[in-house]
Length: 138
Image 1 (cartoon, rainbow, N blue to C red):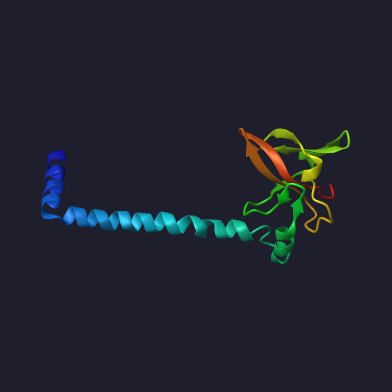
Image 2: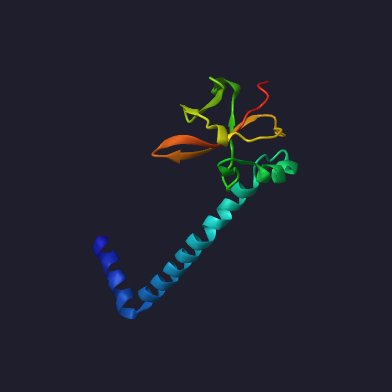
């Protein structure tokens, strides 16, 4: 079976057909990998709460002292058991790890979504809070 496949490839190479097919294949592959990543991020950049699209512009306007919260990544919803205040500061559990929220990461203003949210980033494999918005604990 392997010898037959090798003969087939050799015949294609000698006839020039394999090279032409190869060029088309690589061209198609390049197009797919160039076009697909931007398309796949469109949903993340716009989708914050599918049930409340009227909040999209509000989500887009949120920022903390660390900068804009929405950079194309979605916020993580935080359950009441996964955040607390300690010594006058917020703490939040991200991916199972408790993280102290810096004061400049807290988003000022009313929380129109009502639920606690964090916009994490990762440094040396550990989560950090870029933005944090406490909810109503209810």
